[in-house]
Amino acid sequence: MSRRLEIAGSALERPLCNHCLGRLFASVSTGMSNRQRGAITRYLVSLPTQESGDCHICRGLFSEVPKFGRLVEKSSAPFEHSNFLVGSKVDPAVIEREEQLWADSSASESESIKGEMNREIGKVVEAALGKPVEFKNPDVVFIVDTMFDRVTADVTPLFFYGRYRKFSRELPQTRWPCRECRGKGCPRCNGVGRMYESSVQDMIGPILMRRAEGDEEYFHGMGREDIDALMLGNGRPFVAEVRRPQKRSIDIVAAEEEMNASAKGLVEVEGLRPSTRGEVRAIKSAACPKTYRVSVRFQGEFDHRKLNDIPRVLAEKPIRQLTPNRVAHRRADLERVRTVHRVEIEAVVGSEVVIVLEADSGTYIKELMHGDDGRTKPNVADIVGVPCEVIELDVISIGDKGA
Image: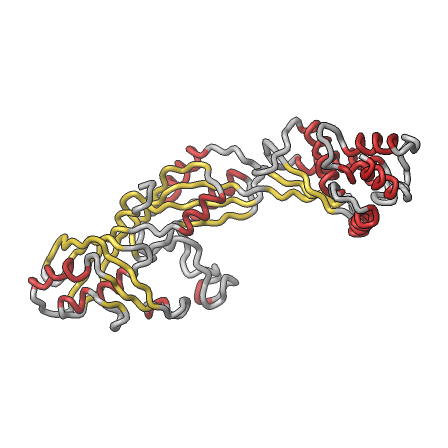
């Protein structure tokens, strides 16, 4: 106790309000405010209990807490939220004076002025809105600039998980800016700024953004299929993100129905539900095997008996793939080793063969068929001994836990 009284005596060599005095001993006891600690400390060092109106540290900043609370309440109006958190910006000169006080008085049990300011404003807002403070996952964080009486609302995005099937061979997963103008609009893209008029993202994200009254939307898929590949079977998992939503409770069933109606058979969405940022990370980092159906055409006569060698040579063997020629302009030239787990010859009609196979995530399936000028080994063309081309490629299953 004597050590704390010594610290208090040293601190009170300059005028301090009870907030700034009590904050020196914030970790000493619980169940009381810093202002109460300050009043008790002032009494124990035999000084008048009346706190200074010209505080050396905050310059009366805590008297403005009710005003800051009203500013937050006003800023909260556009946003639906069930909880919140308050943060603050404080004049750096105040922070500097506080840190100098800690050093001069050798205080080691202090709390920062920003911590107390956040809490005190939070109490006012909590009472005004009738909503609780939430520290871990707040719907919105209100940042109070105490120097300029401004409040900014940092709204937590909304996330929606679902799975999509794609039935068009002319539809990319996400928006693809024009390579020529990079989205500005030019003759090549007819002024739209895109390589393709629409995408899977366009059939999902804008509907959620409009219903949530958000500012931006983003699409996070568990990998992606080639534009000319169909996505069938159990569908590809995705998380759609809506940033700065004004509404947080939307009719997800109605949103899914709208997506499927407006897509007109090009895309089908199912299993739409609320999601989290953590699930975005999980989806982006997932490495699930995928099952494909590939139709190839051999460009010459071949011994059909060699088709039986395809499963024997490919299944459970290392496949070495250099970055394909078709994507070399945007990806590093690396060697990747993948595994094909299962291969089945599904149909043979003349020179056309349908192959079903399950392979590691990240396997370049088209190159596994034609070899890509020797950049993928082994490959189907080499096994059969005749060049081939891929006619159609479909993803028929994603091997994630939600399958």
